[in-house]
Each structure stands twice: as structure tokens, then as C-alpha cells.
Image (cartoon, rainbow, N blue to C red; front, top):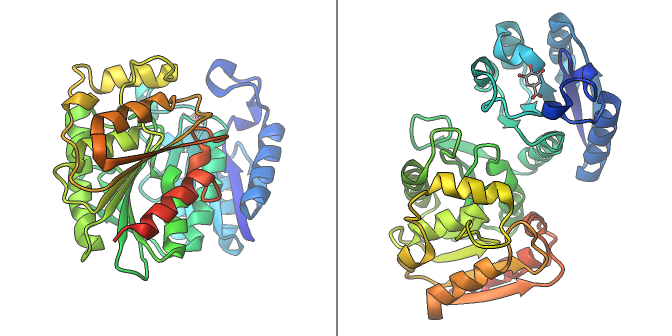
Amino acid sequence: MLRVLCLNGPNLDMLGRREPGVYGSLTLPELEERVRRWGADSGCEVECLQSNRESELIEAIHGAADFDGVVINPGALTHTSFALRDAVAAVDIPVVEVHISNVRSRDRWRRRSVLSDVAVHTIFGRGPDGYRAALRHLVNRASCPVETRRYGPHPDQVFDLRPGSGRRGAALVHGGFWLDTWGRDTTESWAVDLHRRGVATANLEYRRLGSGGGVVPTLADVAEALAAASDALSPTPPIVIGHSAGAHLALAVAARAGIGGLVLVSGVYDPAAPGVDEVGAAAGRRFDPDAATRLDRLAPPDCPVLLIHGAEDRVVPPAQSEAAAAALGGVAELAIVPGEGHFDVLKPASESWRKVADWLERLP
Ligand code: DQA
């Protein structure tokens, strides 16, 4: 059981009453109750503290040596407090920064965080769920060794390497409708499960909409990350596994990448098609306004391909994977998994993931 300290900074005691259009209707006690419950579900005992005083937060961090990690929403201190930043840098425990709102799409001054480069991970714009993702991130970090490597100067040009005991390696491409509010923490449970199965992984990050991405820079990043990851995962060419928009990106670069296999999970290839979640459809238009990465414009990869989709996916309909399988023709194997939705597939206990793991084991 991990022990986690969850800190909320100035004005977060006003949650529920404070700008509900931005922060929602959940009060701080309700949020803390959820955080403790999410913690218990993912194997952490969570202690919560909120303070409007910078000094109290700093002292709480100094005193956190008994904890295995800290989740902190520093409120507006995020943008100004070098003292809080120094406190985070001074302690030898992982600190995850969380923001309920999308700090990058609001006032200009909110875009800067003086803490992000000393935090092990930053999550923003996912509402209260961001705290759950932060707890999972701490649990995943603690479950196997991880080393972050850089493939370019931008903060998003990184990948996380986790070791394996076999020859096979896998590169993971996370989804999130090409938006910077979703990051590689979403595919970490896959990485940890593959480590347990002896498969080394590189969990790729890349520039997305909101962090300098767009069809050209994002595809360049994914291709570059994959090349760097292939070197790190050699000698065998890696299997590439993408989720949702990450499946689309993986397919778009796969033909040029020299890979050993491609697994496309809950992929979204045509965001304008009926049934795709509204946020995704809008993001898809922004990401690739000229539809340069439409299925019929992508070169098919020269390797075995598995497509998996949950039959109950209400975010991206399974018809997307059916269309992709038809476009790829003979090389692709398709499985529509009854009873599973868009995010179920990210859980190692899901039937979809079991199918992926079986397929990987069967690869020559
Ligand atoms: C916040 C964002 C900050 O800019 C703001 O000052 C807060 C809350 C968030 O959770 O979205 O107080 O950290």
C-alpha cells in the first residue's frame, strides 16, 4: 500500500461555489472523499490537506518524507511560487502536479507553471478525474523501474522506458483526440503489465494540439520517438500499440517505421464520421483540416496488424476499426470485444487487453 499526501492550495476550499463553469460543482470535502476512495481502489492510502497559505504547503512538502508520493494542486501558486517549486525540488519523493481546469486554454498567465519541470508529471484539464490519474501514475511509477529519455528539446519530446526480460519490445502511443489534456499516463497500465510479461516498453509522448502539435509536427514527433525507441528496445523491431487517436498516429507512421507488428486499439481514423464524440470530432478537424491522414491516404504497414475495439465504445464507434480493417485488407486481424467500452481496454484485466497479450505471445 502506497502512502500518498494530497495537497490542495489557495482557493480550492471554495470548490463547488467558485466559478462552477470552470471548476464544476464538486466541493472540496466531496473531492477529498473521492480521492481517498480512488486511492483505496488503486492501492494507496491518501491523506488530504488544503491550505490557503504558501508556508503551510511548503512545510507539508518538507514533512512528506514518510509518504511515497505527493499529489498537489497548487492553485494560483503554480504560476508564481518559486518557494513551492524549491520545496518540491528539495524532497526526494515523486510529486505529481494536478489542475482541474485546462490551464493552457485560459488566461495567458496560467500557461506558465514554475513547478512542472520539478514535478514527475503534470495533469490538467481532466476535471476531478485528474487526481485519480495522478494516483494511478504514482502507483505505476512504483511498480517497475522507469527511465525518461528525451528525443528533442520540447518538454513533450520524451518517452518512458521500462525494462523487460525477453527480446521483444513494444512502443506505446497514447490517445486523447490529439489534445494535450491527455498524456502518456493513460497507457502506463499497459506498460506496467507488459513489464510483468517480460516485454520492455517505450511509452511515447509527443506534441499535441495545445502544446505545439498539429498533423505535421505531431507525426514528425511520433516517427522520431519511434526511431529513438526502436534503438532503445533493440535488437528485435518493436511492436507498436496505439490507443484511440494514438492508434491513428501509429498507423500513419507505421509504413515507414520498420516495426515487427502493429496493434490498433479503439482507433479513431475518421473523426468526421457519425458517432464520434463531439470533442473528438472538433479536435480532429483542427488536427488535420485537409484530411491528409485519412485511411485511404495512408500506406499500409508491412507487418502483422491486430485491430481491437470494444463493442460498447460510445466515444469512438467500432465502425472505425471495421473501416480500418477493410482498408488494410488481408494483413489485418479484427476483434470486436463484447461488453467493453473506450476506456475499459486500457485496463490490463480487460478482455481486449488479454487478446492483445495473447496476440503478442503468438508473434514469431
Ligand atoms: C487550478 C488552476 C489555477 O490557475 C487556479 O489559480 C486555481 C486552480 C486548477 O485546478 O485548474 O486555483 O490549479
